[in-house]
Image (cartoon, rainbow, N blue to C red; front, side, top):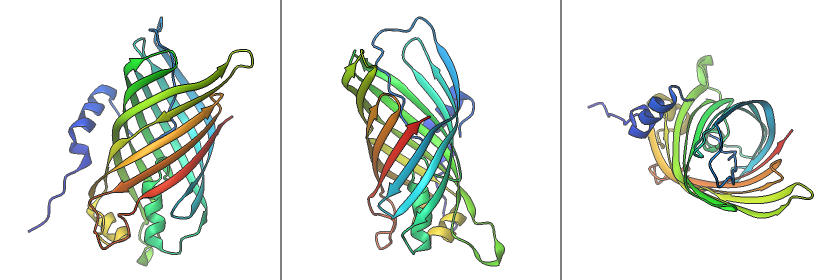
Length: 257
């Protein structure tokens, strides 16, 4: 009997997201906002090549990422919608195992040769120096895995969804020097979906086509220009005898041009 897999595109929250936003394609560069009162009007902004990002993971990868394009929409009521396109290039692989190198691409929250991410933040409580939100992040990564025999294409798509709670806090602010220091945390559940064929080719069938797990993100932002993020995550429904059930950490440093 052919095994049936649950497809992320059929996940109810994903369908709701498509209905609300019409088209979806992680990232985890959260846009902090400490506006406690309603805005006079909604705003829409477009940014090009805004952040340069360096990342290092516990799987011994060092990579460079560019935030190539970003659309941002803020409503009067504090709802935030952002669509971002990232591009990542690995400059050093300290791991000699091909499957773990490909796994690092999968677990990089802003990784992928090309990566499109939709992020929405729904406000719960808002104060002058802190706020709480529901965070929903979903997207698609185009990943280039390890080389395959017979010159087969070595790329595949990973679709993901992250749903959790965001807490933001303003730690310090000096209006005279226009400087600030902020903190955020984003514990979340996460789901990844890819084809059964790619799971077999790149991960030896040790990861289900529909994989689930959890993660937590901790970050500090200085002057809205420098962001330092520590991200940890783990997939739970993997082969217990395999190498992909480990907790993966990543340090991300992003600088706004």
